[in-house]
Length: 79
Image (cartoon, rainbow, N blue to C red; front, side, top):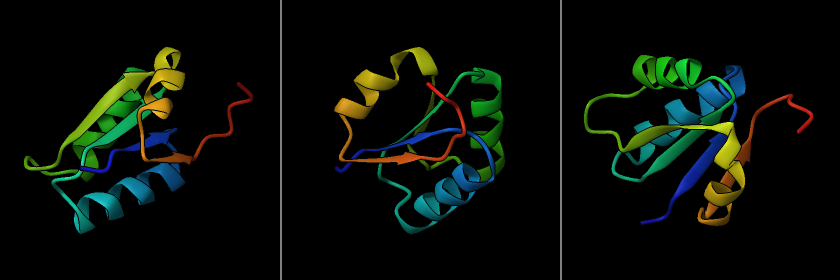
């Protein structure tokens, strides 16, 4: 399985997550944000029970990105 990591929880991240889950619900998607609450809220709003999504803290972004096949940067953070 190809693994996707999305950095951010704004409008573009929401659109990416929505389309990834719709097109390939069995593919793992990691959502990374400085606020875990925002990440979980976005996952809950966009995905369904069969989707393989997880929320992660921004502090482990480098590890997650290194282990991903595709990284989508959808944040305005300067870090």
